[in-house]
Length: 370
Image 1: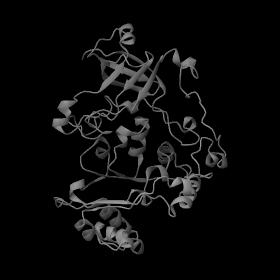
Image 2: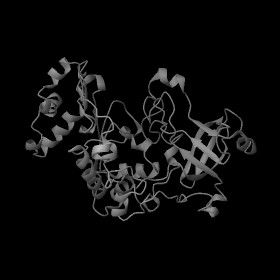
Image 3: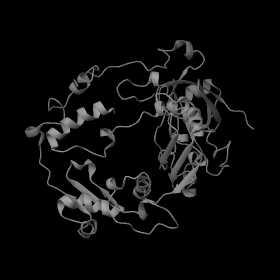
Image 4: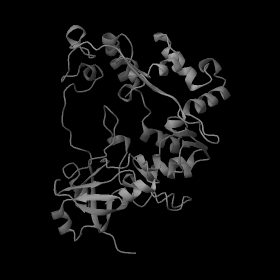
């Protein structure tokens, strides 16, 4: 969301709730990742020479992996804060060990507008020199002489400050069970409306209209489809979707946990059995999935419940058991769906700036046994 869009949404939230909705993904401003990576490489519109990645793995989870790799390699300073050595961490100049959720206290206030708070204390002390994210960011801020903006020395002191309006410290709040929920008024919207310009649930979005966009939902053909790019579809006749979730993993997490890896050992591509038969592919075969950006390899599993034109490639794959040093980077190039995806800013959605992860072109063919 742009700053202009953020301010527009927050003005209506304030009208209904009396305060802004903070720290909520749908109400936050983000830098546009494809634009940032291109700025790193080009220096335009201004140079970006350093990056800190915290609990993230852009070499696996960001679109257009080849471009991400080039951008990260060109930085003067790249720092990763994480629990494990990921493909992204292998490229870093410094890797800072991070506390797990059991080694730090937590306080959730659910954007500060819904009247619920929940907390969890630190259960065990962090081993060695692991730090929580507040400690890391505050340490950097102090080096930048921002002491006045970071007066609290610990995360618990921050929570004491946040809980001050209800007259409790973090420890006192935990002593009461670590949970608070104010009474909810049924059908409150009848009195104050919803957080929109009209106070109603809007199909015709006044916010979008005020920002200069079409106010009604409308269909636009994806920029890379058999209909918008029939020329490209001659070589890449199938429709690629990526990112479907599957247990026991979440994004690129948990591949290094042996018990979970035993439950789901290989990356799986789903194809309609009729399509696979036409391609000479049988269940369990390793296949190449190729797009105009590159190709990746996954194991075929039939799925008759999908359109015969569609190929579903799993997201988040890397192989912790493989060599971490370059060029392998834990096998990041082998089965990574983002080798296939396109993040060209010119084809990103004009409203959300999102890039197409579920509507690209590809072809599939059997991988030769090595």
